[in-house]
Image 1: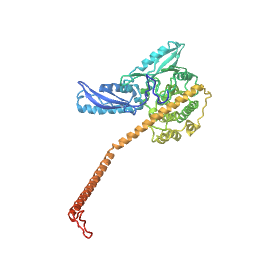
Image 2: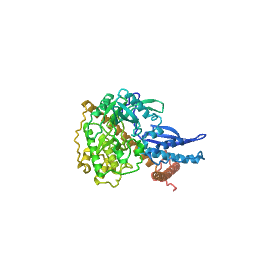
Image 3: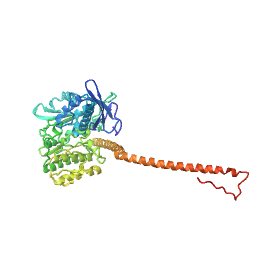
Image 4: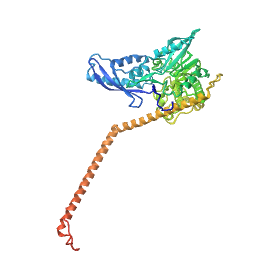
Length: 530
C-alpha cells in the first residue's frame, strides 16, 4: 500500500504507541456514587478523541492492578462518609486528574494493556492471551512435535504480541519460546468494527511479508539470536526461538527474572547499577556491528532496546527482526517523533542505541530526552557517545551514522573474537520490496513529525498569547490606543468646528456683495475674531 493511501475496506491503521491523554471534563452525582466524565485523546488531533465515564471504584481497581509495577501512584484515598459533598468531589476530581497525568506520562505504564483498556475500552477489550492460545493450539494440531507448556503472561510490553513456553515432545528437557502476533479488531465511536492490519508500518504485500518471515531462520550472524521456526499468514505471525534462562540485557541490568511480567521487572527496579566499562564497550560494539550488517543488507530494523538484546554468555544477540516486517512501531517512537532530524531508520537505530547505552551506563533510562547533562560515567568516552545521540544538540542537528559510532574511542579498540561468518541471503525481488517498505516507513515518520512540529508551534503561540504577561501588554496597548484614538477624535472634532465657523463667517459677507454688484477691488471685508 502506497504511503498515506487509504487502507483497504475493512482495514484500519492504529499505532498503539501514540500517547493517550485524559482530562476530566465534569462529574455527575447519582443516588449512591459519583461518575467522572473523561475526555481521552489519541495523539495531537482533537478530532481523535472520545468520552468515557468512570467511577472512583474503577480508578481503585486500575490502581490495584498497577501495584505490580512497584510504583507509588497518587490515587486519592477512599472516603466512606461525606463522599458526596460538592467540595469533596471537586477536590477528588483534582486528585484523579493528577493520577491520570502520572500514568499517561510514564512511558511504560502508558503503553501497558491495563491503562489502554481503562482509557480506550472499545479498542482494547479483547483477551489477547486467550485469543493467541486458541490460534497457537490450532496451529500445533498440524505440527505435533511441539507442545505448549505455559503462557508467559505479559513478559513483553506489546499488547498484541504474546509469548508461550514450548517444548519438543522427543526432547522434553529443552525449552523454547514462541512469540505470536496477530492483528486485532477496532471499534469506533459510531459502532463500526474493522479488522486492523498487523501494524501501521506494514507496507509489504502479504506474499512478500510471508516469504520474508519464513526467511528469518536462514539468517546466521554471531550477534543475532537465531530463529528456529517462523511462519505467517496475512493476519498473524508465529516464531519460535530457544528459551534463554538468563534473559535479556535488560534483565541483566535490572537484576530481573525473565519470566516475570514487564511491569514488575522494569517499572521500579530495586537496585540501580550500571554495567562495568568493559561490558559497555563490548556489548555496544557487538550491537553496532549487527546494526551495520542489517543496514548494509537493506533490512529495516528500528526496534533496538535492552529487552530486544539477548545475552548469551559475554555475547549480545539481537532479537525480533520480524517486528519491522510486521509493521510494528518502535518502543521509543514517542521520543524520536519529537525531533525532525531523526527521520531515517538508521538515525532511529542510532538514537535508540543512545537510550540503550544510557541504561547500560547508569542502570536506568533517562528521565527525559533530550538530556541536558549526564551524570558521572565510567569514562568520558561513554559521555561522548551519549552526547552524540541524546543531547539537545544531537536531537536538533541529527544523529551520527552507525559507522561513525564504531569509529569513536569507546568502541574502536574493542576486539571481537567470533569466527562465525554472517549469512543472510535475501532475493533481489524481496530486497526491492524491503527498500520500498523502508521508504514508506520513513515517509510516515516524517509526516507525523511535521504534524507534531506544527501542533507544538500552534500550542506555543496560543500559550504565549494567553500568558499573563501578554495579557498585560495587550491591556497597556489597548489603553494607549484608546487614548490616542480619543486625542485624534478630539482634534478631528476641533477641526470640524473650525471649518464650520469659517463657513458661517463667509456666509455673513453675502449682503455686502452680489453677483450683479461685484465688490470693488478696493473693498475688503474683515472677519470678527472667534
